[in-house]
Image 1 (cartoon, one colour):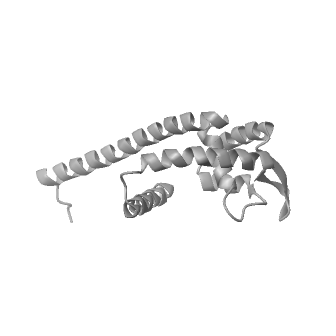
Image 2 (cartoon, rainbow, N blue to C red):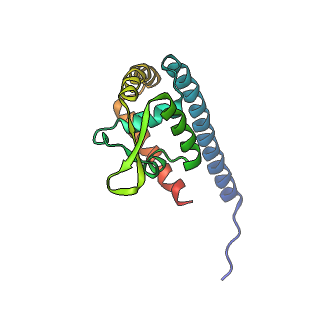
Image 3 (cartoon, one colour):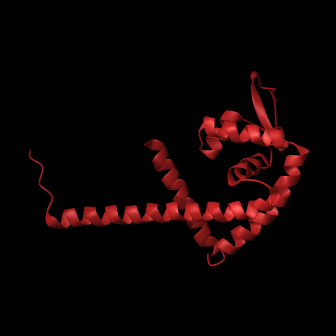
Amino acid sequence: MAQAKPTGSDIELDHEEAELAHKFFFRLYQTINLTLRAASKTLTDVGMSPQQWSILDSLSRPGLQEGMTVNGLVDYLMVSRQSLNGVLKRMEEQGYIERVVNPDDLRSRMVRLTDEGKAVWRQAFMNTRKLYTESLQHMTDDQKRAAIATFERIQKNVKKL
C-alpha cells in the first residue's frame, strides 16, 4: 500500500515543530552559557571553576562521605571520563579531593572530599545560593519543579539517541 504524500499543512506543521524545537534548544544553549558565565564570576572568590563546583557539590551529597568512584561521577555528571580526569587531577593538587582505594573493589579508587574541599564547598555553596535565588526569583516552586521534570525527560530521551 502506497504511503500518502504529505500535504502542505503537514509540511508546515513539521516546519513549525522543527522551528519550535530549534528555538527551545537554542534558548537552552544560551541559558547554559549565561549560567556558566555567571557561575564563573560567582566562584572566582573561592578560586574554583563551575566544573570543579559540580564535582564538589556532587561529592558533598548526603551519604557520600566515603566518596564516589570515577565511573560514578562520570555517570552522575554526564561528562566524559577524559575531561573529568583532568579536573580531578587539578582538584587533587589543590587539596580539595583525594583518591582512596575502593573498599568494595580494591582495583578501583574512590574520589572523596578532603577537609579543605568541604570548607571550600561550604563557601562556594553560599556564593552560588545567591546566584540561584536571583536567577529563579520570578519562578514559583511549581514552575521550578516542572522545569526540572522537563529537563529530566529531555535527558532521558537524549540518552536513548
